[in-house]
Image (tube, rainbow, N blue to C red; front, side, top):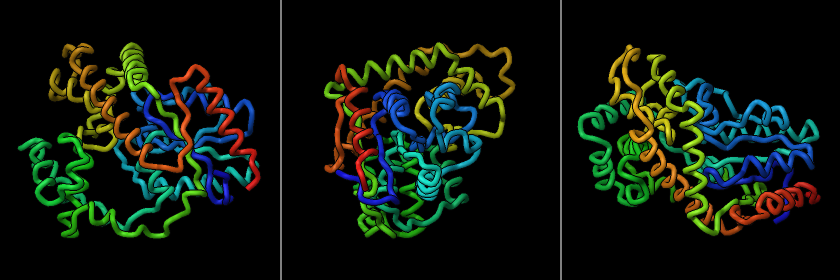
Length: 328
């Protein structure tokens, strides 16, 4: 796949813990690149450990964009990402650098490469009502409601996938049409996928990825991840239903802290040990990786690099370099 248009950019995707950061840092030693983050969690300030955010040293080595642009009390969307990413690609090219989009939020990649549908906008009152129902009945009960009106969408969502269940029900109540029906409509202003060539890091052995995920979570725990979530809770203006706190890892740590100290002040309360949140976070992260790989494998034109191969970083770096040096 050659890059056919100056309006697009090279994309590097992969499941969590697949080694994307190491690849682009190696690429930055060969070519003048700037990284556009494709990650719905890295946009939030103060969420550093649990998102495996690039370090200050790494961000000094190569410019990163769409990191630390929002407070955790704010929301970000696929539509806003598309606008931001397209603007950044133009600006980076104007500086004479190569833009490379890197991350694991497949919804953002899909929106960029396939276009967006004109879905009903978010409705704060309806979301609050759905949250209240979930507090009383639990998200599995709302998942059952969704299954009754949109079995296709419900079948691909976990019973506790609060954010997506809420959005699917919101679309149903606001439009009277299931989300799956909206997705079958032609997107508005559909781009050309060839404008956004996709290189994908995928393991040949799923056990390799599971081990990497477990190691990363253990490192997060040792680096003080629970204290990071405790500090976010102590602000008093965040709650477990916000998109930032629904991120994998944060959701499980928040629940453990909530059980240990349901209401502020938190001083004097015994913090939960890792056994009260880490196994749940591990299971949720594995499920996230599975969903990421499922989407990637639905993209036939992607070029795959086995991220568990001994020479994975070199192979991926050379492939990306080939794309960027190929004339349009």
